[in-house]
Image 1 (cartoon, one colour):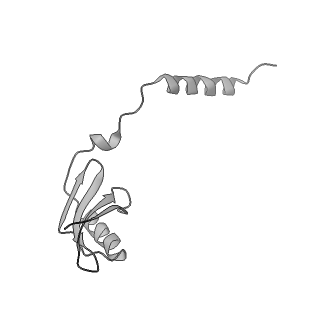
Image 2: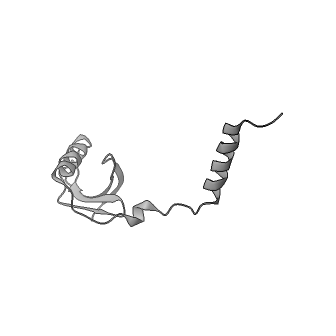
Image 3: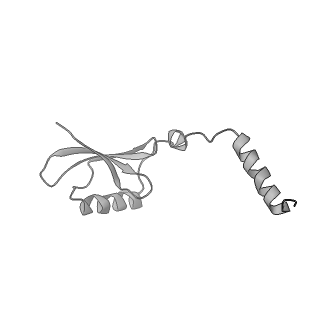
Length: 95
């Protein structure tokens, strides 16, 4: 019994993809830039929902937003945010 032509094409495509060079780390290639007004608004909403004040500093570097803010207790915090949905991915209290 022979293989279906569609199956052979799929196998050939998979083999070509496996032999190709791996994709570079895209986050490392993203340029640092300032936030747009819409990004600032969305980040402020996401932080408010988690009990944080708006950012005092905000920058995009290596595919993540970095933000300095305060929590509900008034403690200074450094946050790392997703560049896709602005979810907090890391929290560090600043002494």
